[in-house]
Length: 592
Image (cartoon, rainbow, N blue to C red):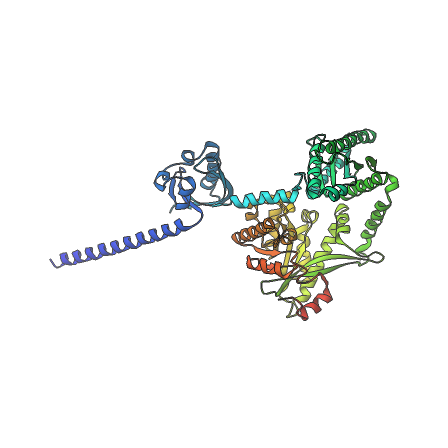
């Protein structure tokens, strides 16, 4: 009989423990629900048959329905068929293959007339036996960022006055046409168009009238240009037309280019006649033309030849056209001479590295960027913009690039021996040609081994355009080098059009904001918004942000206040030779 009371007491105690445990679990669930509902992102769980098992407040708000009206439903019950199919495709990758999926997805708002863009991360949820029982998703609204990216793309690649492609986009397309002519041997033409005495319009009638005329000229020129060709505005009153696929015969190509040029001249005269103001001021133009199809053609040569021909047309009195010919070759021959000298520059020990400091938020030097310089025995210091394109054209960029890499590594090893410089890193620019060599990883390893440099102190800077050329190959190479301890920075961020999804997959350490945007943060709201958004994006991706081209205290202060972590530019110091840099560091030159 004594056993019965004992069992009763034990049962009551056990029930009390169960009650307390249930209360604790309920409180935990309520606390978790409160946290998830306060997150500014859509968080949800879908079952194995892709029905919603849980949604937070943000998800319900995004879909436009109460939580209870969403649970148990599929995406096909909530979204249009095409969008639901896209969502299901990503979900099935998670459930069927056990993948973690990171993707940009579109959601139509409840109103049905607006599409929002979300960056979604989806993960499998496993049962006790290891099978996948559900998926969990987190989707962040990045619509405003994408809008800014698209606006930034327009600002980067298109002229705001005329809407035509600008110099940067023209050069990109010209580069593609040059490569195409090398393969097909079909001629292409580049036409430089410059309005004669256009400054008279601005001086007599004001800039507004000048801008109206430029816009009208752009529209008139577009009327005689094929959609497959590129009409661009370089700036001021200068336009460029790139025509491709003019045939295999040079005379045929010349006649075709001449006919187009004559139509352009006529259209420009008509543009003046159709303006309702200034009927007494006729407008004409000069046009310079160059043809190219052989393997020696390159972007810079074509641009230079067309410009030389344009100057000849203007010297002839304007309202005419001229072709580039052998008599205009003096400047071109000078360039050929420079290229010949470049072949000997490495052997003659004429190349050297200068270093520009990078500082942290306390204005302490934490690293440098290595910048190549050519000290020509007769020409003096040759700017990189003159010889780097030459090196890329004739593949001298490979030995030069590896020399830069090994020299930088050797400098790292030397600095590691001194207390004042042992913690500094060196950032080295890597060209697309160099990066796509099959032995690139081995070359980098060799440079580290022969110099004894610490891989953790080496940063390789790559461009957005390089990343997008062959994404899978680029990612594989970056991962292999990252395993060695090498870091990667995305250079000139903002001048390309990178995918958020792609950036997320890369082993990047940091982003460098292009100086063209940094220069305008104090005056241009668009530049300020782009820089601020880039900093926010980098923070969300866990990336360090470096601002290039900082030239004033005001710029530095603005960037600092908006969360930028690393700074580079003339305000902190111009590129210096090694010995000068050492003195500069010793004298604590950096402003605070």
